[in-house]
Image (tube, rainbow, N blue to C red):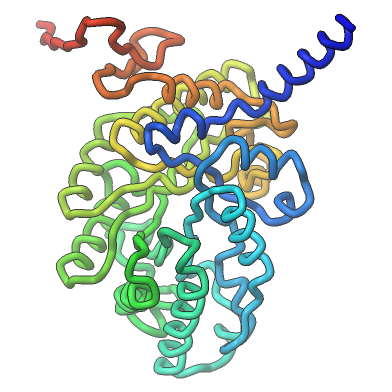
Amino acid sequence: MKNIFMILFIFFSFTFSIYAQLKTLANPKNFEIGPCIAMDPLRNETQYRNTIIAEFNTAVAENAFKMYMWTGPNSYNFNDTDYLVNFCRQNGIKLRGHTLVWHSVVPSWLQNGNYTTDQVRQMLQTYITTVVTRYKNDIYEWDVVNEAISDSSPHGLRTDSFWYQKLGPDFIRLAFQWAHQADPDCKLYYNDYGAEDMGGKSNGVYNLVSQLKQEGVPIHGVGWQCHFYYDWRLNQTFYENLERIKALGLDVKVTELDMSIPLPVEPQELQVQARGYADMAYFCLSNKIGMVLWGFTDKHSWIPGFTNGERGAALIFDENYNKKPAYYAIESVLKATVNGAIYNCDFENGVYCWFTNGTCSISTTTAQRR
Protein backbone atom coordinates (compact mmCIF):
# COMPACT_ATOMS: atom_id res chain seq x y z
CA MET A 1 0.00 0.00 0.00
CA LYS A 2 2.82 2.39 0.88
CA ASN A 3 4.46 1.77 -2.50
CA ILE A 4 1.17 2.40 -4.32
CA PHE A 5 0.74 5.65 -2.38
CA MET A 6 4.24 6.77 -3.32
CA ILE A 7 3.62 5.97 -6.99
CA LEU A 8 0.40 8.00 -6.94
CA PHE A 9 2.16 10.86 -5.17
CA ILE A 10 4.93 10.90 -7.76
CA PHE A 11 2.36 10.75 -10.58
CA PHE A 12 0.32 13.67 -9.27
CA SER A 13 3.44 15.68 -8.45
CA PHE A 14 4.70 15.14 -12.00
CA THR A 15 1.34 16.14 -13.45
CA PHE A 16 1.27 19.29 -11.36
CA SER A 17 4.81 20.18 -12.40
CA ILE A 18 3.79 20.04 -16.05
CA TYR A 19 0.71 22.21 -15.54
CA ALA A 20 1.82 24.80 -12.97
CA GLN A 21 -0.65 27.29 -14.41
CA LEU A 22 0.78 30.70 -15.16
CA LYS A 23 -2.81 31.86 -15.34
CA THR A 24 -3.35 31.16 -11.62
CA LEU A 25 -0.67 33.76 -10.93
CA ALA A 26 -1.87 36.12 -13.66
CA ASN A 27 -5.61 36.10 -12.97
CA PRO A 28 -5.51 37.83 -9.55
CA LYS A 29 -3.41 40.57 -11.13
CA ASN A 30 -5.83 40.96 -14.08
CA PHE A 31 -2.88 40.16 -16.32
CA GLU A 32 -3.52 38.69 -19.76
CA ILE A 33 -1.08 36.00 -20.86
CA GLY A 34 -1.52 33.53 -23.69
CA PRO A 35 -0.25 32.10 -26.97
CA CYS A 36 -1.20 32.06 -30.60
CA ILE A 37 -2.91 28.76 -31.37
CA ALA A 38 -2.20 26.56 -34.38
CA MET A 39 -5.19 24.55 -35.55
CA ASP A 40 -3.58 21.22 -36.44
CA PRO A 41 -2.14 20.48 -32.97
CA LEU A 42 -5.21 21.97 -31.33
CA ARG A 43 -7.34 19.37 -33.10
CA ASN A 44 -4.91 16.47 -32.81
CA GLU A 45 -2.61 16.77 -29.77
CA THR A 46 -4.03 16.30 -26.28
CA GLN A 47 -0.94 17.72 -24.59
CA TYR A 48 -1.10 20.85 -26.74
CA ARG A 49 -4.74 21.42 -25.79
CA ASN A 50 -4.22 20.62 -22.11
CA THR A 51 -1.27 22.97 -21.76
CA ILE A 52 -3.24 25.86 -23.22
CA ILE A 53 -6.18 25.15 -20.92
CA ALA A 54 -3.97 24.87 -17.84
CA GLU A 55 -1.56 27.74 -18.41
CA PHE A 56 -3.23 30.61 -20.23
CA ASN A 57 -6.16 33.01 -19.92
CA THR A 58 -6.06 34.57 -23.37
CA ALA A 59 -5.18 33.45 -26.90
CA VAL A 60 -5.11 34.42 -30.55
CA ALA A 61 -5.24 32.36 -33.74
CA GLU A 62 -1.95 31.91 -35.56
CA ASN A 63 -3.59 31.69 -38.99
CA ALA A 64 -7.26 30.70 -38.67
CA PHE A 65 -8.64 34.25 -38.65
CA LYS A 66 -6.60 35.48 -41.59
CA MET A 67 -8.20 35.76 -45.02
CA TYR A 68 -7.61 32.08 -45.74
CA MET A 69 -11.24 31.67 -44.66
CA TRP A 70 -12.47 33.98 -47.48
CA THR A 71 -13.13 31.54 -50.32
CA GLY A 72 -15.08 33.78 -52.71
CA PRO A 73 -16.84 37.17 -52.96
CA ASN A 74 -19.67 35.90 -50.77
CA SER A 75 -18.37 32.57 -49.45
CA TYR A 76 -16.41 31.61 -46.34
CA ASN A 77 -14.99 28.57 -44.61
CA PHE A 78 -15.57 28.99 -40.87
CA ASN A 79 -14.62 25.45 -39.82
CA ASP A 80 -11.37 26.39 -38.11
CA THR A 81 -12.56 29.69 -36.67
CA ASP A 82 -15.72 28.16 -35.22
CA TYR A 83 -13.67 25.31 -33.72
CA LEU A 84 -11.23 27.72 -32.09
CA VAL A 85 -13.97 30.00 -30.77
CA ASN A 86 -15.79 27.04 -29.22
CA PHE A 87 -12.56 25.76 -27.64
CA CYS A 88 -11.84 29.13 -26.03
CA ARG A 89 -15.43 29.63 -24.93
CA GLN A 90 -15.60 26.21 -23.28
CA ASN A 91 -12.34 26.76 -21.40
CA GLY A 92 -12.76 30.36 -20.28
CA ILE A 93 -10.02 31.72 -22.55
CA LYS A 94 -10.39 35.25 -23.91
CA LEU A 95 -9.84 35.36 -27.66
CA ARG A 96 -8.18 38.10 -29.71
CA GLY A 97 -8.88 38.44 -33.43
CA HIS A 98 -5.91 38.47 -35.80
CA THR A 99 -6.08 39.89 -38.41
CA LEU A 100 -8.72 41.50 -40.64
CA VAL A 101 -6.51 43.24 -43.24
CA TRP A 102 -2.95 42.19 -44.08
CA HIS A 103 -1.05 42.60 -47.33
CA SER A 104 0.56 39.16 -47.04
CA VAL A 105 -2.68 37.17 -47.08
CA VAL A 106 -5.01 38.25 -49.89
CA PRO A 107 -7.12 35.55 -51.60
CA SER A 108 -5.85 34.66 -55.07
CA TRP A 109 -9.38 34.93 -56.49
CA LEU A 110 -9.44 38.56 -55.34
CA GLN A 111 -5.95 39.48 -56.51
CA ASN A 112 -6.50 37.94 -59.94
CA GLY A 113 -10.12 38.92 -60.39
CA ASN A 114 -9.64 42.25 -62.19
CA TYR A 115 -12.15 43.92 -59.87
CA THR A 116 -12.73 47.66 -59.85
CA THR A 117 -11.86 49.88 -56.90
CA ASP A 118 -15.54 50.17 -55.95
CA GLN A 119 -16.00 46.40 -56.10
CA VAL A 120 -12.93 45.77 -53.91
CA ARG A 121 -14.09 48.39 -51.39
CA GLN A 122 -17.54 46.84 -51.20
CA MET A 123 -16.21 43.29 -50.88
CA LEU A 124 -13.76 44.26 -48.13
CA GLN A 125 -16.53 46.02 -46.22
CA THR A 126 -18.74 42.94 -46.53
CA TYR A 127 -15.89 40.66 -45.43
CA ILE A 128 -15.04 42.71 -42.32
CA THR A 129 -18.69 43.14 -41.41
CA THR A 130 -19.43 39.43 -41.83
CA VAL A 131 -16.47 38.18 -39.80
CA VAL A 132 -16.64 40.71 -36.97
CA THR A 133 -20.41 40.35 -36.63
CA ARG A 134 -20.23 36.55 -36.56
CA TYR A 135 -17.80 36.58 -33.64
CA LYS A 136 -18.82 39.77 -31.83
CA ASN A 137 -19.76 37.87 -28.66
CA ASP A 138 -16.52 35.89 -28.57
CA ILE A 139 -13.69 38.19 -29.70
CA TYR A 140 -12.94 41.09 -27.39
CA GLU A 141 -10.36 42.88 -29.56
CA TRP A 142 -9.18 42.79 -33.15
CA ASP A 143 -5.91 43.49 -34.92
CA VAL A 144 -7.74 45.35 -37.67
CA VAL A 145 -4.77 46.24 -39.89
CA ASN A 146 -1.46 44.40 -39.75
CA GLU A 147 1.99 45.58 -40.89
CA ALA A 148 0.96 48.48 -43.13
CA ILE A 149 4.11 50.53 -42.44
CA SER A 150 7.16 50.07 -44.68
CA ASP A 151 10.44 48.79 -43.27
CA SER A 152 12.33 51.29 -45.42
CA SER A 153 12.92 54.97 -44.75
CA PRO A 154 10.91 57.20 -44.54
CA HIS A 155 8.66 54.43 -43.10
CA GLY A 156 5.41 55.47 -44.69
CA LEU A 157 2.65 53.15 -45.84
CA ARG A 158 3.48 50.10 -47.96
CA THR A 159 2.46 51.55 -51.31
CA ASP A 160 3.08 48.24 -53.12
CA SER A 161 0.46 46.34 -51.11
CA PHE A 162 -2.72 45.09 -52.78
CA TRP A 163 -4.91 47.17 -50.48
CA TYR A 164 -3.00 50.39 -51.07
CA GLN A 165 -2.89 49.79 -54.83
CA LYS A 166 -6.65 49.26 -54.98
CA LEU A 167 -7.99 51.60 -52.30
CA GLY A 168 -5.18 54.01 -51.52
CA PRO A 169 -4.33 55.02 -47.93
CA ASP A 170 -8.02 55.19 -47.02
CA PHE A 171 -8.20 51.39 -46.66
CA ILE A 172 -6.87 51.68 -43.10
CA ARG A 173 -9.41 54.25 -41.98
CA LEU A 174 -12.23 52.35 -43.68
CA ALA A 175 -11.24 49.01 -42.11
CA PHE A 176 -11.38 50.46 -38.61
CA GLN A 177 -14.70 52.18 -39.27
CA TRP A 178 -16.30 49.03 -40.68
CA ALA A 179 -15.02 46.89 -37.79
CA HIS A 180 -16.36 49.40 -35.27
CA GLN A 181 -19.75 49.51 -36.96
CA ALA A 182 -19.94 45.71 -36.81
CA ASP A 183 -19.00 45.55 -33.11
CA PRO A 184 -19.00 48.93 -31.30
CA ASP A 185 -17.86 47.31 -28.03
CA CYS A 186 -14.74 45.66 -29.45
CA LYS A 187 -11.26 47.19 -28.99
CA LEU A 188 -9.48 47.76 -32.27
CA TYR A 189 -5.69 47.65 -32.75
CA TYR A 190 -3.11 48.50 -35.34
CA ASN A 191 -0.42 45.75 -35.21
CA ASP A 192 3.19 45.77 -36.45
CA TYR A 193 6.74 44.51 -35.87
CA GLY A 194 10.01 46.36 -35.40
CA ALA A 195 8.19 49.35 -33.90
CA GLU A 196 8.53 48.59 -30.21
CA ASP A 197 11.35 50.95 -29.28
CA MET A 198 12.16 54.42 -30.58
CA GLY A 199 13.28 54.59 -34.21
CA GLY A 200 12.21 55.13 -37.79
CA LYS A 201 9.68 52.27 -37.93
CA SER A 202 8.10 53.18 -34.60
CA ASN A 203 7.92 56.81 -35.73
CA GLY A 204 6.04 55.63 -38.82
CA VAL A 205 3.57 53.68 -36.68
CA TYR A 206 3.20 56.59 -34.27
CA ASN A 207 2.52 59.03 -37.12
CA LEU A 208 -0.10 56.68 -38.58
CA VAL A 209 -2.06 56.10 -35.38
CA SER A 210 -1.74 59.75 -34.40
CA GLN A 211 -3.32 60.75 -37.70
CA LEU A 212 -6.09 58.18 -37.26
CA LYS A 213 -6.85 59.58 -33.80
CA GLN A 214 -6.91 63.15 -35.13
CA GLU A 215 -9.39 62.10 -37.81
CA GLY A 216 -11.68 60.49 -35.24
CA VAL A 217 -11.11 56.96 -36.51
CA PRO A 218 -12.19 54.35 -33.89
CA ILE A 219 -8.79 52.94 -32.93
CA HIS A 220 -8.05 51.86 -29.36
CA GLY A 221 -4.52 50.50 -29.31
CA VAL A 222 -1.22 49.54 -30.91
CA GLY A 223 0.05 45.96 -31.02
CA TRP A 224 3.77 45.41 -30.59
CA GLN A 225 4.68 42.06 -32.15
CA CYS A 226 8.04 41.68 -30.33
CA HIS A 227 9.77 39.04 -32.45
CA PHE A 228 13.16 39.41 -30.73
CA TYR A 229 16.57 37.78 -30.70
CA TYR A 230 17.29 35.78 -27.56
CA ASP A 231 19.62 38.39 -26.03
CA TRP A 232 17.08 41.21 -26.21
CA ARG A 233 16.88 43.31 -23.05
CA LEU A 234 14.47 46.00 -21.95
CA ASN A 235 15.72 49.57 -22.25
CA GLN A 236 14.48 53.12 -21.77
CA THR A 237 13.36 53.59 -25.38
CA PHE A 238 10.51 51.11 -24.85
CA TYR A 239 9.18 53.29 -22.04
CA GLU A 240 9.52 56.40 -24.19
CA ASN A 241 7.57 54.81 -27.03
CA LEU A 242 4.92 53.54 -24.63
CA GLU A 243 4.41 56.95 -23.09
CA ARG A 244 3.93 58.77 -26.38
CA ILE A 245 1.38 56.18 -27.55
CA LYS A 246 -0.47 56.37 -24.24
CA ALA A 247 -0.50 60.17 -24.56
CA LEU A 248 -2.63 59.72 -27.68
CA GLY A 249 -5.20 57.88 -25.55
CA LEU A 250 -4.23 54.49 -27.00
CA ASP A 251 -3.43 51.20 -25.28
CA VAL A 252 -0.39 49.05 -26.07
CA LYS A 253 -0.35 45.25 -26.13
CA VAL A 254 2.47 42.78 -26.75
CA THR A 255 0.87 40.58 -29.41
CA GLU A 256 3.42 38.10 -30.86
CA LEU A 257 6.31 37.66 -28.44
CA ASP A 258 9.10 35.19 -29.12
CA MET A 259 12.89 35.24 -28.66
CA SER A 260 14.78 33.03 -31.11
CA ILE A 261 18.16 31.39 -30.52
CA PRO A 262 20.74 30.24 -33.10
CA LEU A 263 20.67 26.46 -33.60
CA PRO A 264 22.02 24.32 -32.07
CA VAL A 265 21.17 25.85 -28.70
CA GLU A 266 23.74 26.23 -25.93
CA PRO A 267 22.47 25.94 -22.31
CA GLN A 268 23.71 29.41 -21.38
CA GLU A 269 21.66 30.89 -24.20
CA LEU A 270 18.49 29.61 -22.56
CA GLN A 271 19.45 31.53 -19.42
CA VAL A 272 20.04 34.70 -21.41
CA GLN A 273 16.70 34.20 -23.14
CA ALA A 274 15.01 33.80 -19.76
CA ARG A 275 16.20 37.23 -18.68
CA GLY A 276 14.61 38.72 -21.77
CA TYR A 277 11.31 37.04 -21.01
CA ALA A 278 11.54 38.29 -17.42
CA ASP A 279 12.16 41.80 -18.72
CA MET A 280 9.08 41.70 -20.92
CA ALA A 281 6.89 40.13 -18.24
CA TYR A 282 7.88 42.88 -15.81
CA PHE A 283 7.39 45.61 -18.40
CA CYS A 284 3.92 44.32 -19.25
CA LEU A 285 2.80 43.61 -15.71
CA SER A 286 3.99 46.93 -14.29
CA ASN A 287 2.37 48.88 -17.14
CA LYS A 288 -0.85 46.82 -17.26
CA ILE A 289 -0.12 45.55 -20.77
CA GLY A 290 -1.31 42.15 -21.98
CA MET A 291 1.39 39.72 -23.13
CA VAL A 292 0.63 37.33 -25.99
CA LEU A 293 3.29 34.84 -27.13
CA TRP A 294 3.59 33.68 -30.74
CA GLY A 295 3.11 30.08 -29.71
CA PHE A 296 4.20 28.40 -26.49
CA THR A 297 6.03 25.19 -27.48
CA ASP A 298 9.06 24.99 -29.75
CA LYS A 299 7.41 21.95 -31.34
CA HIS A 300 5.02 24.26 -33.19
CA SER A 301 7.00 27.46 -33.67
CA TRP A 302 7.16 29.37 -36.94
CA ILE A 303 10.79 30.41 -36.34
CA PRO A 304 12.74 27.39 -37.74
CA GLY A 305 10.76 27.44 -40.98
CA PHE A 306 11.01 31.21 -41.36
CA THR A 307 14.79 31.19 -40.76
CA ASN A 308 15.57 28.07 -42.82
CA GLY A 309 16.56 26.18 -39.71
CA GLU A 310 19.09 28.74 -38.54
CA ARG A 311 17.16 29.76 -35.41
CA GLY A 312 14.62 28.21 -33.07
CA ALA A 313 13.93 27.47 -29.38
CA ALA A 314 12.06 30.78 -29.23
CA LEU A 315 9.28 29.87 -26.79
CA ILE A 316 8.76 28.96 -23.13
CA PHE A 317 8.18 25.19 -23.54
CA ASP A 318 10.56 22.96 -25.47
CA GLU A 319 9.56 20.48 -28.18
CA ASN A 320 8.60 17.91 -25.54
CA TYR A 321 6.46 20.39 -23.57
CA ASN A 322 9.07 20.74 -20.82
CA LYS A 323 9.23 24.13 -19.15
CA LYS A 324 12.30 26.12 -20.10
CA PRO A 325 14.10 28.75 -18.01
CA ALA A 326 11.99 31.36 -19.82
CA TYR A 327 8.85 29.83 -18.31
CA TYR A 328 10.24 30.05 -14.78
CA ALA A 329 11.41 33.60 -15.43
CA ILE A 330 7.85 34.67 -16.23
CA GLU A 331 6.58 32.71 -13.23
CA SER A 332 9.10 34.49 -10.99
CA VAL A 333 7.94 37.93 -12.11
CA LEU A 334 4.27 37.02 -11.74
CA LYS A 335 4.95 35.95 -8.15
CA ALA A 336 6.53 39.31 -7.30
CA THR A 337 4.67 42.29 -5.91
CA VAL A 338 5.34 44.53 -8.87
CA ASN A 339 3.82 47.66 -7.32
CA GLY A 340 6.61 48.88 -5.06
CA ALA A 341 9.18 46.60 -6.65
CA ILE A 342 12.45 47.55 -8.26
CA TYR A 343 13.33 45.58 -11.35
CA ASN A 344 16.88 44.27 -11.53
CA CYS A 345 18.43 45.40 -14.81
CA ASP A 346 21.50 43.15 -14.84
CA PHE A 347 22.80 44.22 -11.43
CA GLU A 348 22.62 40.78 -9.86
CA ASN A 349 22.55 37.48 -11.71
CA GLY A 350 19.60 35.23 -11.00
CA VAL A 351 17.46 38.01 -9.49
CA TYR A 352 14.60 39.49 -11.47
CA CYS A 353 12.93 41.79 -8.92
CA TRP A 354 13.53 43.15 -5.44
CA PHE A 355 10.35 43.80 -3.51
CA THR A 356 9.34 44.73 0.02
CA ASN A 357 9.05 42.21 2.85
CA GLY A 358 7.26 43.30 6.02
CA THR A 359 6.97 47.01 6.81
CA CYS A 360 10.05 48.24 4.96
CA SER A 361 9.90 50.38 1.84
CA ILE A 362 12.04 50.54 -1.27
CA SER A 363 13.63 53.72 -2.55
CA THR A 364 16.26 54.52 -5.14
CA THR A 365 19.06 57.04 -5.35
CA THR A 366 21.21 57.95 -8.28
CA ALA A 367 24.67 59.44 -8.34
CA GLN A 368 26.84 60.75 -11.13
CA ARG A 369 30.37 59.46 -11.14
CA ARG A 370 33.01 62.07 -11.95
